[in-house]
Length: 465
Image (tube, rainbow, N blue to C red; front, side, top):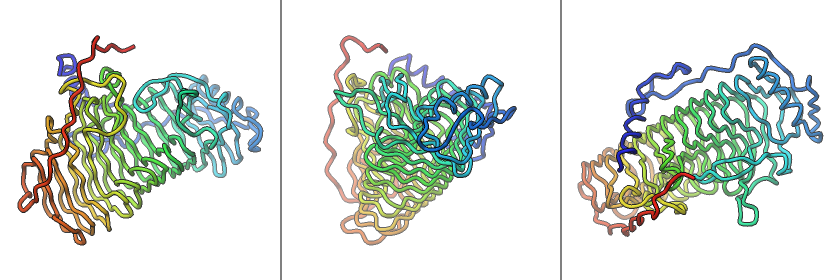
């Protein structure tokens, strides 16, 4: 690791010790750092109703201009609340402004139009890279003290879903997407979308998401993507998606590595998850800015097409995944299993990956405790760790329930396994290759995973462009 990156990482660690004056912090800690409870709400100097500015709410008339004018006026008058009363408001993209609280009243629906022209084109994040793309239905750029609260609903238009392609390279609109924003509150509303992300938080700080009901269908329909963000609370949400319910990421390849925008201090509590395409909670595979200090607790996982928890990266990502804590969860209905980590070969390789040993992600301090499983096909598939950088610190303790297959681990040091009381499995409960630590007595030997070659040096050296 070069001197610049050592300095940046150490500087970032030092900054974590500085209290954030704009937040109230809870007592729960993740490896020594505190997780946020609630950002300060926007000031409520005035209250404006979008119907006063011409919104119709008949589900046919485009109300974009009326809604945006209400938000803009609230902002220039010093901030306050913009109220959306009962009705179906047909709208293109709406931009959030600083110090404005958007409140969706009972029976109110924001319904996105099917016209891509109604969603401006700008720089957006897509699979870890900044590219040209359409803004979300509701978006914010460099806004502070913003909120959306319910009990209304936000519905994306199904015609907008999908992925960029060679003939249509612009990224499709997300549903809600703050970029470079801070002090964000999303509470008590529901969403529906198809084939695209519901909430994509990008380079944001101090975020509270509570009591949302998120529904998406089809591939690539993530529920909440936390992308290079700090101080995030996700609490009491019910998320059923066509891809990851929650995905934590921080950039891909040398672009993400050079920017070093880490996702850190994330707390996910009291949520219910069901996923029909991939994992309920995915950490990675876009991890080139680093991911650390994540706490997942008191959650219920009712279905996953693959694994309930999937930690993933690859050679060429670089950076780190560290201090991941999972406690007191209930897992059933998975087609893959409880937990998998593939830290060597998951996800798209970047056009300009991080070269050499620096390109192998550093991983440490994964802790899983107090977990109940019901008929999971695999308890742990933990063999996807590169031998050049073993996972340092893996705790797996107080596990109960039923599974069809046990635990496979490779290239791990300082493992601590205890109180694993499961039934129904065939074969050995534990198989290991190049694993040291405690609780390994009686483990069967398994083949070493295939070695993945390191990335050659970039010539010429990479520069942000």
